[in-house]
Length: 378
Image (cartoon, rainbow, N blue to C red):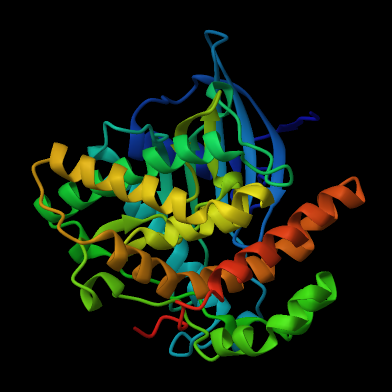
């Protein structure tokens, strides 16, 4: 891992933040750095993703202690001269996503004991009016765990362990969200496939021609191109804080146990079943998806029900209704997989690795087109 030594006036590339700006903000917002205590700053770029540029910083203090920081700044593909905050756009969503993640770390994460979250050292909100982006500086939890390989996929036992933690987290978020009235402050950015500048069906079929047999069903999914919202209200389901982008790349594990869920920019209030769908469709090994989705949905249901009981909350929704809600929300999550898995396959070093991702797309659409599924209308 190569490192770049930075001076106070240097920008921390690929972000637009300077070292001095960051240290001043940390001093003001966290009070754990004092002037003169930082002797050396180095950086190493982690990635530039669809939503964020991420860099790891290495701060050497006067006492030779090392502090590692994860710095995230939103990315956007836009011309600021043509940006209109009143219009739905990718840029506006990115601003809202970023601010939502800051809100999560300032509110929800402070209440959790069932799962660990990184400390937020400093942040700046994005300005939705001007599209001027802020940043988030977080504790680096990398030394404590690692992500699983999305290309390889998680086996059944790994899926069970993750789903049980997910269900417990969702139940606890229901408790603290309701008791502390935190849900009232959530402003959801709605992901929309209308903002994708290409034909999603053609994009996926080029990667996996077998999907052509499901053209009618996929086109039915594409008729509703926005993420379903307020599903918990529609079906009288307990409101939880949904992660919104929960798949293997955004989960930190210690061995096979979940240490932390990362990247909360897509968080919103919902049922939580959309988290389960995205996690399974994106992360589970294809043989698991071929036959065991109903079993894993049952694992989630029983774990969520048990956690709600543990927290003295009632949960009287039947498994049959949960299955219907899960499938109602699954069509959008499947479209997300159609968008992400084809380019993700470029990371595969063998044809077998690419075929594994193709198989996931096929097995999920097989599950979603079973006779008891009606594109969410029930």
